[in-house]
Image (tube, rainbow, N blue to C red; front, side, top):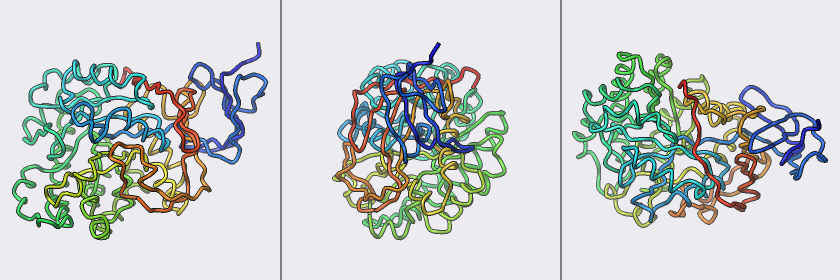
Length: 442
């Protein structure tokens, strides 16, 4: 029997985390069914991708799409439009919405809102709190759940768990890997007077490297005590990176493109409160430590920590200004520019954005270009030079800290389960996003 396809991607360079080569990809019923030299006569549709590079669909494992409760900043539809415009095929969305995502009912509500309304595929973190500790074994295994997320340091929303006893109780209940925002809240409270009104450059002085390090050490010790696995989000200090290198058996590590790209002193001077995020952008020495961790394999994944606020909100005087910036749409072009500048290989980028999420979170059918996997692809033009602008941003908040930055390497197309949802800066829709499936054993 002749093998037939719904779609063939013809002549592109395929890049996995362990190598690359030119081949065609055959797609049937949303899955990859053949890789090799394929006959266009055996398909309903052929897309020529000669001269382009095909990556496994990029997974952004930390976004805040603000729905329900703060839809004036973002919602699931607009956030997912930003994702696919930037080449991102799947996202893990965070629980600090209103109401908080802390129960089976609030998770089900988000899944209902997202199904075939989001343009990308999705999973939702469930917030770990003092009140739902006993329910964690059930909550972390619900369909559509990315696992448990705990805010140890204060950030947007009301999900703070700041005492060690409660944190340990949460960790003791885990079976899946849980994600943590790691800053020591007591130290942040004690140091609030360090903030200088009107001066966002005092943000990293207040939320200093010690606050991050103390919290991360506590987390690692608790994970080791109970034999559990943790995922430490948006590492911002060289100290944490060096420490976590010795604790990879219990801790996986995320960094953000902005911590790798925007250097604290210069960013605060040029961007003001637009550079304000938690944990903060820091100086060149810390940034060098983050790159060292990326190069040595300590870093497992890249997450954008897409956390939009309106320009009006962000332009309030510090410290009344909220922390957070857009990022899901710029993750791919910013990091491809680093690839073209020799900061990391394209295979390492794939490891951080596709294979890494597959490995540490247990994605069932995403994270690699191989027969049997979902036909999710981030198709890029590594030679294209473009200037990022606010006009290009699909987020409802309509701004980016990279406005005016010229990069080399650009997302040409976004394919999700065989559907072309973005091509040449145009969302081709319709929205067909579905919940990500996870391996039962993880």
